[in-house]
View 1 (cartoon, rainbow, N blue to C red):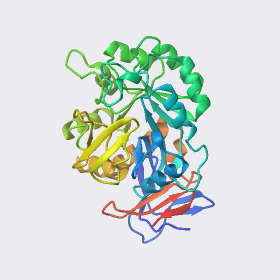
View 2: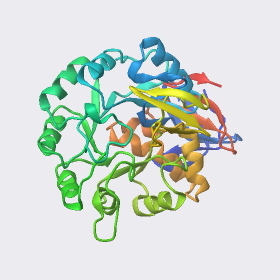
View 3: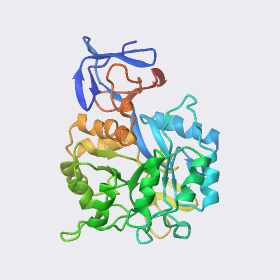
View 4: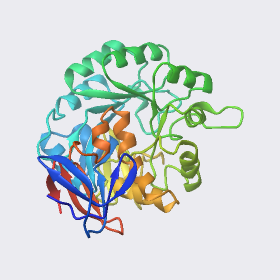
Length: 362
């Protein structure tokens, strides 16, 4: 089957020509043809709290199916369900509901547990009463309950670096976030093997000229991937461009989406937190931002609108986040890789979405 496109994103570059798909894989790229539009790898979202009216922290298997179907419509073919800080019994109950096998929707890469090992000064919308300092025993109990593959923690907390070692030994990706770390504390974590930062600048020590904190340190290092929520709310456009110019090629788009994504304004829940969405902005009653209503295709469009080349904007939604979770085959359309594809027209409207070569949208 040919996709009828004019170009395909392969390893971050646009390759002119059509794409052929066979047996669930990309068979060939760069084929002669007269098509139009672009084939991109399916978007990989590392931080999804909910979608399409479904709060994943309180969801059952049917809810996961609904949320997955709605994400496919926005081009996301692989994602990490994300659980914010909660009490242990709540996290265990949420983890037990996470599907371990794909059932016709997007790929579930494993669960991103965002907390509870966060800085008390940088909780954001997370409930402070459920915050804890690093605890390897709790991590092991969470792993027994569900497919934990990713954890955000504040690396400056007591015992955090030892927990980083424990998590890496279990094959779990560690991201620094919700952190009050100084530059020295951030460097210690990055030297320990932490290679990414959750929603850069948000819920972390501010960057100043004598105290760059974790954000400035992450931007300055070439071995750290920075994740950003490009919705025009979490970051100013100038800040996003600063991130891009400092970290182009290692900047990953994420949505931090909540149940309101794809639904519109109204009252929602983010795990145990009550959230109101007004004009597309999600906040707690006290005004604190509480996730977003962003979709990955809109994140790509927003990044391009700031002047980032299209290939680079798509790369930030595909190859870069796929690399963070050691799934490089999901971030490219090189021959032999899974045919998880988003077909876009020249106006960046989604025409088709395929997972494992099967057309699920369009």
